[in-house]
Image (tube, rainbow, N blue to C red; front, side):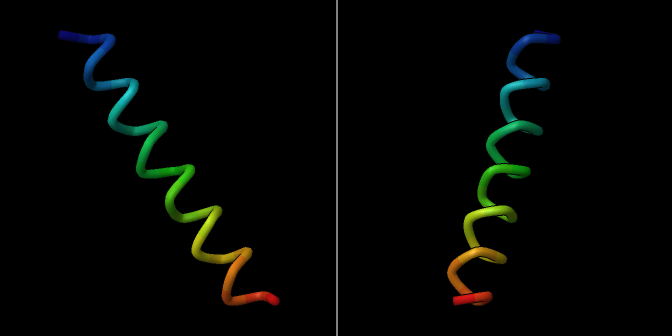
Length: 25
């Protein structure tokens, strides 16, 4: 359960990074 929670947070974080990079271009 904890691992699923952590992987979800990491997925959201990567999504934010990707969005900021694509908008930064």
